[in-house]
Length: 161
Image (tube, rainbow, N blue to C red; front, top):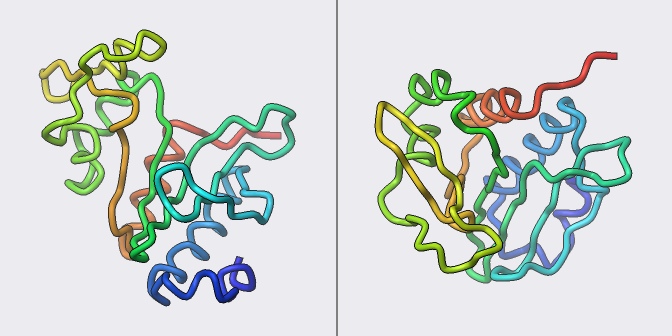
């Protein structure tokens, strides 16, 4: 990943963000996910790194990195069955919990393919978010990496064997 991010096209990404991506890449590999060593053109961003499950044909997606034209790095998790991890989320650090309880992004049932979006309860409050607005971490940092990985390991536990 270090070699890949040293390519000229990634000059828009700060060294601090590159260090985070490299560290995250190593950590998620421990959970059994990788990006196949590739960075693709993004949908609403300049570049994307897509992490899928290794050793499977379907490669279920756990997370993406989005890199914007301005050099911002955004980490997004793809999480399901949020209620089964409610206790963990309710007791998580603020920067983790905020990705679940943020203001805005409420599902308006605009797309029948994803409606009703993500529906879960945190701190006794029913939350219904649009699938496209959930679980983003803007400006991820190395200091928060253990928290991101703990969250991922709750939703995507490493299989024994």
